[in-house]
Every structure is written in C-alpha cells, then in structure tokens.
Length: 113
Length: 114
Image 1: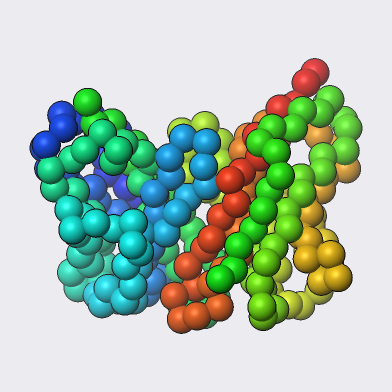
Image 2: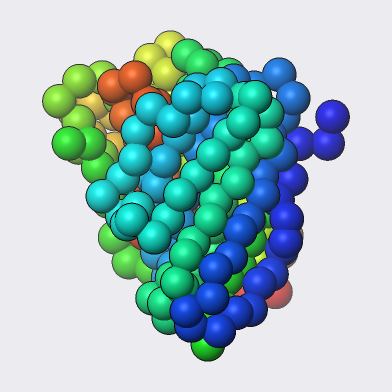
C-alpha cells in the first residue's frame, strides 16, 4: 500500500468547463475527506464520506460541486461550469474512523483560465 | 466552533537554531490537535498529534509539541533546525462531532538559513 493517490496532479481548464478529480484512499480506510487549499491559506473542509455515504458537506461546496464514493473505495470530485475562483489545490485524505489520523494525498492543483 | 490561530505567516531561523512555531486553539471541549508539514506542491504529512494522553508529544523528524491547557496552546518545537525542515507547517484541530474533520490554521512558512 503506497498511501493516498490523486489524479491528475495538475489540471488547467477554461472557465465554464467541467472537471473531475479522482482520489484513491488507503485500502482499509473507511473515511475519505476532500479539502480545498488556496494560496497562502490552510486547507478548508469540503465534504467527507464514511464508506459510500456522504455524511457532511461544507457551505463552501456550491451546487456546481458534486462528490461520489461508489462502493466505498475511490472517490471523485466534479466541478461543473468552473469559475476562476475555483482555482486551488484540492486535497484528499483518508482515515480509519475514531483513530483521528488523516493521511493526505499529493493533491490536484486546478487552474481555471 | 473550534479554531486554531497561527500568528504571522513566516519565520526564519539559522541552521542548528531552535525552531518554535506557535499555535493557539479555541475549543469548548478537550481538543484533538495536530501538526502537519507541507513541502512545495505536495500534500500534508502528519508530524504529531495530541489526543489527551501525554501533554508532551513527540513526532517525526525530531519535532515535539506541548499541550498547555492553561494557555490554550500547542506550540511546535525542534531543538536544532536542519535545512530539510524548510517547509510550511499547519496546526489543526479535529472537530469533536462525528465527522472528525480538521480545521486548519493559516500556516507558517519556515525558512532555514545556512
């Protein structure tokens, strides 16, 4: 097991296009989190899953954002009709519930032109 | 709501000098606290965590942090800085609800001068 992986590492898109990111967590971890990090700031929570159920979404997650975790394994984060304000690093983390230790992936850096 | 504060955004030390990165938290209940390190264009790596056991927590790469309830602080220290410690450091508190989501400070960029 090599840890949390994310794909792609970098994405450049034009405003108005849709983008999808993938996160593969550590295999035995039942929790998966998405965070967004903008320049000069700490990561901010977007949403999380326990197994395949999405249990909480932040107010930061507008209607243009959707996340899934089919079968409780990998997760996807889709942004529709991207805006320049969506430019950020999107981080995925996984954990075992109640151990309170999240392992982060390398992130996907999104640039919206 | 829980929060952490990291005052300032940048600290510079000489190689071999003490590293001290400050973090203060706000929580109405005993918190779970974390320090993460982020190297350029990478994700976050856990340095250490406080989960209400020992107040002095030792982490990786020679770092340690002390939980002080009276000061609501969880400062990160390392006795002797190495060039490889240059990175950004984030303090975080774990939500006490079911989500265990992390609330991060703004981060502190550490520069180590030769």
